[in-house]
Image 1 (cartoon, rainbow, N blue to C red):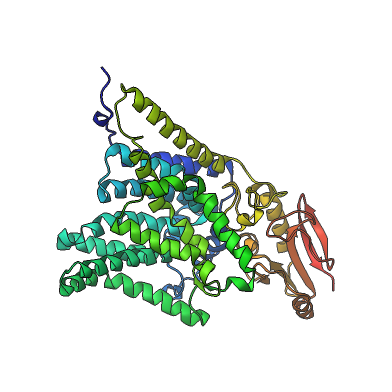
Image 2: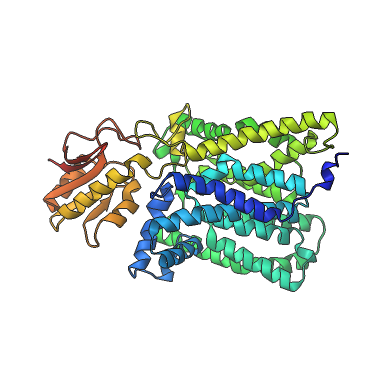
Length: 496
């Protein structure tokens, strides 16, 4: 006689989810060979690690970004001695911790049973949205790991002993030191809960005493926000989208990315929604951040796509709850109707899992933009594959050769101008003291080039050959001529 599904339990599910998600995230790292993955990893993490290794380290410089992930990266780099190993090891490690901590939350925080929790953790680990986050948003992952550990404490905060409240307070500090958006979500969840408690006629003094446990983390976040505002003379992360695009294009981007990420699963999100203080607050603040440009495009704090990415955890929970409401998780193996329901669930999970696996194993080409979607604009927000970094993996060796060529050619009378995407590569392959100017995403104007030519005898530029390349810059102005070519990549000099 076949036993009921309820009798089957899996021992050590957190460890199994950790190992499975670690292995899944390791696949693209292995396929990438010696090259790292991710845009932020090469553009921001690599320069910071190298700067610290060269002695440019000062804790008081952390005035506009949270430092904990950088400390972790630097520590692994000092032990391993390899920038690329550090990035390739920490990506899978953080992803394994992220998925296993998510299971910890749905188990201890939501009280889901073994079967339902494992389905949620599996879906979370193979969902291409979360794999995209693991591509280069290491600070997001670290912040969410601590947040998932923190939430079970928060949901029963009034019942906790002082020692457990202290642990919750420490976790809140670690979240604040890890990632800004996660910190904002955390405080929104905390204080919206306090407001609800007040409306439920809880004593104001009791709510105030509870809030004091989170005062240290709030002070730390305020420090980052204040110092960033002073440093940039504006609200940190504030953006005016209409300065770079039309309203119709912006609206299309927001809705296009939302339906790319959630469209097919949105019916399950709606079906599985239920009122929960934590998930309601989390979803609300992220939805506001995601769609804010539609209503007020002139000012946004932190890009809308980053808010949209953070909808993944609550929406995953709603999706699995939708499966449960359709009775896909109930029944016995010996019951025919259960076979039908289970086969539908298995098919959905296989499709989502196949999409996630495909996202990790199919590379992009220099002949395509970073997007594999119908609307190539979405490639600005969501890369079409994990097998790339700031350019296709096939071009990494060619860019390395070009940087080595420039490194030998640069002297006091010459300068290299680089796109933002090449920042980390320049730090890796150029000697200290070389003249390098970053022109971010907008190509230098004729006036800027003329001004540079007055200060330097030779101006170098590294980019793809004409007709190829990413970032909407497939053709250079005629004033640049190639002096060294390696496959699709070339070194150019400016001719006024």
